Length: 624
Image (cartoon, rainbow, N blue to C red; front, side, top):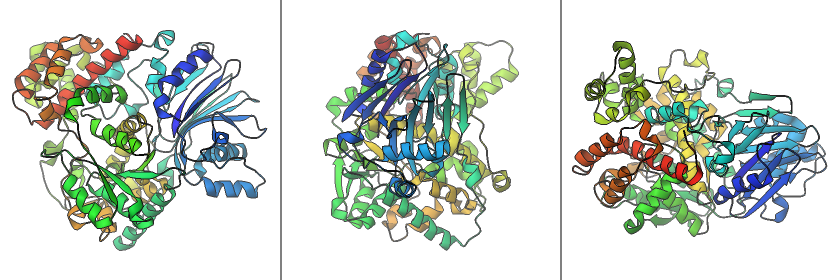
């Protein structure tokens, strides 16, 4: 796990600029750095040492005399099996790293090599003989990669936006109003569009590759989940056993590491399942689970985490909040996030910081199960088992879905627009927050989700499967993955996610709806598979908290003065957000009546966007 950056066939930036880009993401790889240059091409690397800790495994790396170079972020968990196959074909290796295996595999199979990998990655392979660059990300986009094409036909790429911000003035970076509009109206969907809030700066999607030469740049979709799904008609008990076997093996190969491995435990079903399997696979006393406690708040799940720890015998490490440093932590969390999000990532950031301080650079976590196995209440309307709540969509429909309804209503029914109109409609549809978006901005275009190939023969009669497929690949999970990547890597910690093993993903999407959602019970197959493995109180939990901070309480307490001061300061986003109205909502509602999580999250989306854009503009010169 590392940070990468580079450029290809462009004179827009130079090696000195690339060194600045690399320095901006040094937190991703605190164990070393490297830079390799050619005339108009260069690769940079920041190393987090996980496999083969020797200098031999440093990057950028060349494979033998092939002319192939790589800068790479991620892990190929089945590298030992691929290495053995390559050795049988005559390949030899001088390191014990997965990086060298990737290069040899690419030398043998070219882009089709990616289909052999079980892992997560964002990589750039440069063939100095052919002057060819290939960028690739893993099947589901666990590892991020951003890129821009230049006016002179080249490419600039990096693991985080911060790398581009380091040379923002040279690249003349500008805010993208269409991207910002998308992020504010649908904050979970921007990542799935392939766009960002910066003009001409794109994000690569899961299973994508760019194949570039001095004459052309071609985008390739080397993986489509739809091509790997077949209908499953086996008995539920058999499927539950197979699910557990696949999940266990996914955890097993993710234990391959030359440094200690930890886990993060929320107390929920998903993370508890991972901790229990880790305990089964090795000595429980050698497994450490990190738990964040928000004692005496509705967001505290530590009681469930304690039950899992007692049941499995792993060591529990408790992470708590130091409220005296809360403002600085929240501010750093917003800057690290590089995004607009209706919640704070500070709790996750605190967990990963504690893991690093306790000597762990790798954690195996339970992310991805909700999007794979229908873990959210907004899937209830698609319960085909007869669970009947006629108005469930109105009860569980998200704030952001209602926003789209409001915007569409405006477009269809009004020819002139006033703030009073918006205010009336805002009250009619959900609450006053919509009125903070200035009307021309609200009615402007947003980016659309990228098209997605779906297995129509399987999904034609299953609305749940279709919704899950899009949420997993485009609408929700890409945003969640971005959150956990930037949050964990801000402390140099690698997060491994067994639920995103492609074998488990394709198996899960082949299952009938009732294996995911039945009689109002979510993640049915995971609950059945973990029977006896985790405490019954955890396995049968019907509530879902998520790793959320008590923002609604903090906004009327320890964050109050900071938020008030910040709302007095201008931000680039003020051209699209009515700052006085945001301030009024804060003063009249959140300061006076703490505990309204729904309103707090909507407010936080706008507040954090203001704060982040102001920081980026003032520090790096990004402008409209």
